[in-house]
Length: 155
Image (tube, rainbow, N blue to C red; front, top):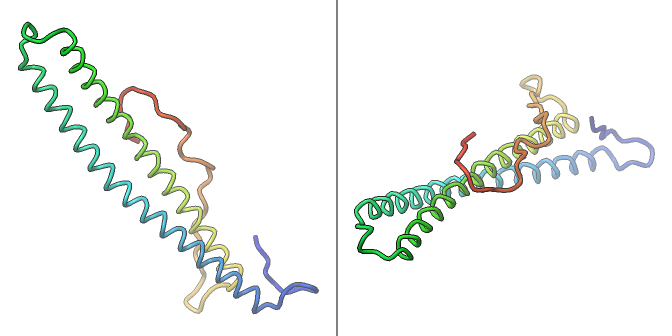
């Protein structure tokens, strides 16, 4: 725990309290920015998934109606490659899920630090004991750090 009490050679208690409050504000601003980033990623992820899924479904419908005898093998191969590319793009959407988990984890950690700092610097308030949520125990909720082609696995 942080001890911000004034000791010999340390800054006055008021300065330490001001510094702690300023640091707490910065931690909360960073946490709010991460939450805003998470909302942006969620919106973009939903839009991308909708577009990729729609394009893949349209391509599958076209491929089912095509008479393979009238198309060249190169054209059929291009259509098949395009469908696989769209499938790969959908798989890559796992990035959004992993990013969301990391942002939520970091946000909880920042808020816990800000609350703990406030408790240590300012103590309990007049309404009672201050509750500080514990920081996440695991250092990282997502162990994967790269994307490979494969099925989509939602967490």
